Image: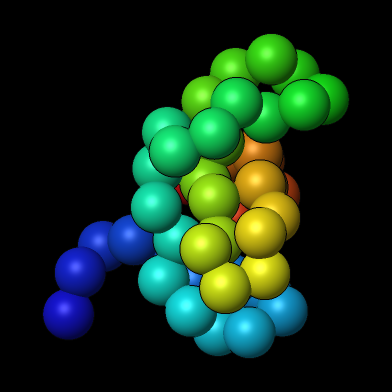
Length: 45
């Protein structure tokens, strides 16, 4: 079990820094399955 947050949509593990968060311009948590990026605030990390 890792510390990585999970995707709200599919429950898959998110990968940090894979893509830039389009809203903040910061690195975010990316879900490969859904092709979505979440900010740290959104996933609570």
